[in-house]
Image (tube, rainbow, N blue to C red; front, side, top):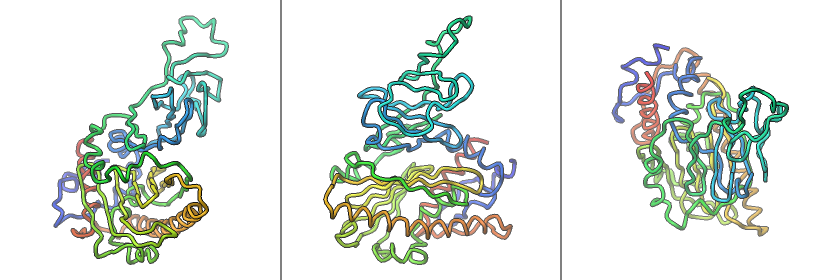
Amino acid sequence: MADLFSPDVLATQPLDHALALPARYYTDPQVPVLDASAVFARSWQLVCHQSQLSGVGDHVVTAIAGLPLLVVRSDETTIRAFHNVCRHRAGPIASCDGRGATSLRCRYHGWTYGLDGVLRGAPEMGRTPDFDPATIRLPEVRVQVWQGLVFVATGKAPAFENFVAGINARLGPERSLAGFEFHHRSSYDVACNWKVYVDNYLEGYHVPHIHPGLNSLLDYRSYITETAEWYSFQFSPLESGDDLYGSGEALYYFLYPNAMLNILPGRLQTNRVLPLGVDHCRVEFDFYYAPDSSAAGQARRTRDLAFSDEVQQEDVTMCQDVQRGLASGSYEAGRLNPLRENAVHHFHELLRRAYREHA
């Protein structure tokens, strides 16, 4: 792993002379372990929207860099997140999302926990010496709800107010995300390192070249990318017609290290890029809409899902091609475009710092 901590590669690089990360950070078999500990265990992770946890006992299951998690509304005012790993012999507490659970029961041997994570029952363990269920509980991780979105931190992470500083003001009350309702999830398994997919998201440089449909809706000449401490955002005027999004602004937020918020009039789409191996990831697209039961509203949603899939297929193809190029042995880190790839540079600088601190 020594090559991954090369001081010259991990040194801070000024934007106007910056190089992309070398290929080994996308192809070395040791990278998933490094990213799990240096990046994912030290960051805030988007897991769902509060509309998916509207009732007591509603829960969602997920995993972050190999750590299974269970997120549950434990009472009317509290959302908790636990390791989805039974303290008996590591069975799963829940294997899928659910509604209205009154307890959390391991499918392996029936050990049952309350919604507060404390063990309530263990079949046939009543006569076991020095066994007290009240002392056994599922490990709990921090939860933060912001703009209706639920985030967790499995280890040390930046102060949440710093993580999202300035976004509320940029959105304004007219674009609050809390009022959206969950509608649909689309998932894509992509044969690339998770960072390849993030790199691709972070720049509009490629839009005129591989996204003809999207390019026709956006004003590339007015496309702007800005960065903050822990996030970056891209925005452009939008002209899509009333049967899709209408007119307004397309706003794309990247929240380090692997979450995206795609905000268009009347619609929120969140993306989570989940590492599944050095050259494989899954991208989960969750679609949320403002309440609208009209026929026109339903038609717009259908068109939105189809259009999003079209753009995704274009991105997936390119990301997989890039991964093959990175693994070919031919690639040497190239110069970044300071005008169009400042958010890629921002992401790589956050990674370099995380790797330096881990080393």
